[in-house]
Length: 269
Ligand SMILES: [Mg+2]
Image (cartoon, rainbow, N blue to C red; front, side, top):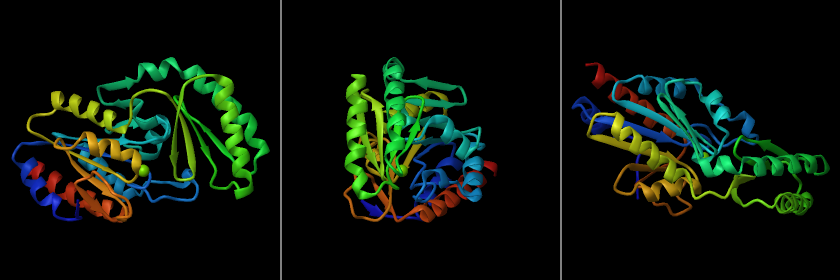
């Protein structure tokens, strides 16, 4: 894996200028916005929004944001209508002429809501526990739960899952445990699904980018080997299947600025 920041866009401008198309897929938290204490505060910088908007409005270019967040939450935070959005780790996808909701997840929606409800009822007894219901999942935030309350939180979670009798998948993130329906789907399969649709829609040849900062993005890095240019965001503590690594969110901003200026200008000229 190579360290990078600036040299990718040099040839990308030539690519798009020569008639090739571009699909840029990116994660949200930790990639487009810094990781913050409260996920509610993870706001997109106006400059980044403008880059995404400029790219998405360029002919032959599509931008997709793929996140663990609820689809509507993600759409409101990014607030660029031209984009493709994938929420709940790709279980729901929505964009111009694009709509998908995983049928196996839909089938388990009632069970997920029942777990959500049980967790909400347990939350007042554990100081700092916050439950975030989503349409196809639920997240339990424990950043503000004292160490002494963690065991209790685990018990509430285990009881909520057990009592509802469904089949669930747990995803451990930054001080958050996400409960999702047990469906063989992830950000990687979602990215591939979007890429396959765009191969029909956009002129060939198409180049694909995927950027992300945590282990759930590794599904995409792995499945896109040989199919995309992949970029892991963050310090080099953990191994990654991505082609490139960049150090953090402000490097992502720089990369997006470079891509946007190369691509938008070349397409306009
Ligand atoms: Mg992330």
